Amino acid sequence: MAKKIIGLSCGRKNGNGESFLKSALMGVESEGIATEIIRLHDLKIIPCNACHACQKTGKCPKDDSDWVLEKTLLGGPDVGVIVAAPVYHVRPNALLYTVAEKTNHLFRRIPDVFARRRVGAAISVGGSGYEGWTAYGLPSINLFLQHFTQLVDQIQVNHCADMGAALTPDNQWAIDRCRKLGINMAKAIKMPPEKVKYVGEDSPISCPVCHCNVMYFDKDYPHIMCATCEVHGELSIVAGKYKIKWNRDDIKNPRFSQEKEDYHAQWVGRHRTEETPQVAMPETRAKIKEYSAWGKYIVPERLKK
Image 1 (cartoon, rainbow, N blue to C red):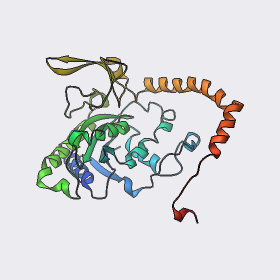
Image 2: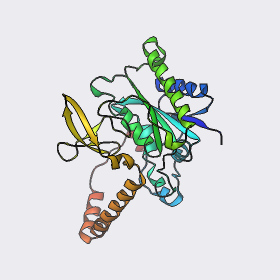
Image 3: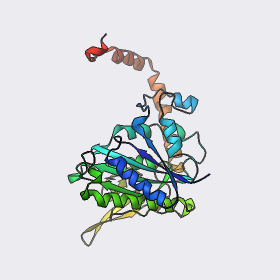
């Protein structure tokens, strides 16, 4: 199979994110690797309503999410993915989240799904960025990519709001950086998966897996955890600067790994052995009936007809 890299465009048609994505894909093609683009706005993407149909059929029967997942995240090392998503309100738009939330049914259905044989990269684009207004951009894209891909590169572009702003002189640096991101991806996809390394920028407290710096204070000082990858560490201050000693086992087996998924499935299973009998209790069933019948629901006039 010929190698190729797919660009997943999560924003407006010909929007800023799509322009940066195209620059990255131009970089890919300059290295002799083919490219394709999937624009989520062209597809039928609807929120998951926990109907569990995917658990029976292996796919969501209601929209195109599984097609997107198959094209971008699943399979062998011959296909990579670059995700470009706009930040609308601190985090990326709902289209990306909607697709990402439909990955759970894949965990048990596909052998070695967490082998991370595909390469991935992230482009997050925000109109502001000051005081953390795009803080969840890259971590959120990583919540999608980290399931089944090896992260190669990523970039957060800020102060890029108006249509066409990506192609202004002020943002030429970002166009150039995205082209470099594409070149990095093309070089990575030519390597054996076990040789692929992250080549993007880092900060002193970046997570060693997703290379983002949104942290969760686990327990109490000095314990800390990457909110995206569940990699734990111990925080300290050395010469006036933050320093984190990361857990090596967590780096090897982060949140989206076979080991952690097995643990999570076992935890949920144990919880259900406690929860299910309580749900079946007569007093619980009576409360469910009472709460289901309570409340005054309102809808727009057009839905009353």
